[in-house]
Image (cartoon, rainbow, N blue to C red; front, top):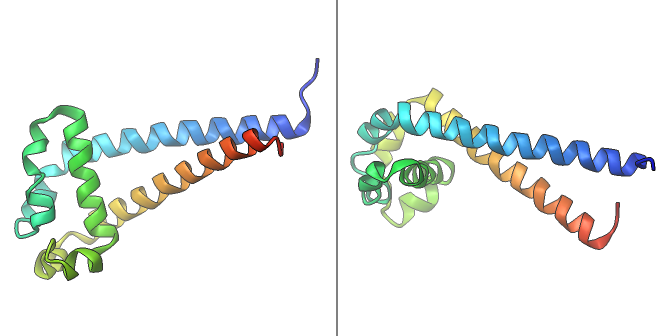
Length: 128
């Protein structure tokens, strides 16, 4: 029994996506455990982040949740500035390299998740 070309493509895209998601999780955990002090020190006046700061002691899940809050503030600062969840001064003083890493990580994760949902939808609709 041989696999069709469409099935091979679907398998390759699925494997790349699955591995990519695990790489994103690994990079996120690395940032959460190595750069969390720097991030929290630069966001002292951001209530959206500081209210979640005690989760830092909650193990990997707490660190990931806190990192997700920080990534949300970095990715959509206008939303947080409008409702008072972030401080403009803190966002301005945040290290640019770390900000760029967080934003790229957030959008890459969303991209991998979107591809995964697309693969599931294609399999359910039997398009492939």
